[in-house]
Length: 189
Image (cartoon, rainbow, N blue to C red; front, side, top):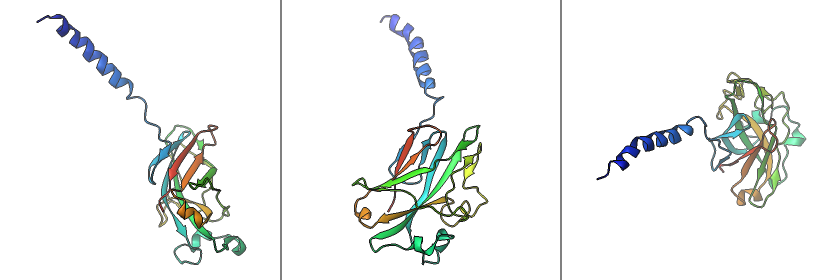
């Protein structure tokens, strides 16, 4: 048996170790999730859909999510439903970062829905702002951050009932700090 192959073993081991360690410094970036709860990387911030669900403004459990809205604005046509996405944003960087303010829901027929404006006085409304280093949006002490629905700020959508038949619905989040950087998540219905 030749000693030459055995002499190459230490060099091969060092090479394999170097290749393995080279990947350790970079964390995986996630820009698509096929369900809720996964952290999505959009620019330097991580977005997590706490929960999404249909909302009813006349239900005692849901009526506070419509606080401050004009009754005419809350009214739906027979072919519409209210749909809420409760979002949490985390800044793990060492600098303040602007949270996204560009969201869309699409169905499989490419029908696009944008959030309905909620008054800033509504304590559950998603309010795009700068998120400080190590901070969360919504703040943990806020109504949305400690609320009964997953500690997330509300993005409110008015959807057509037909979109429920055209699933999956997908939420798109676009970064404010890095142009054209987006993430997508399929919504649970």
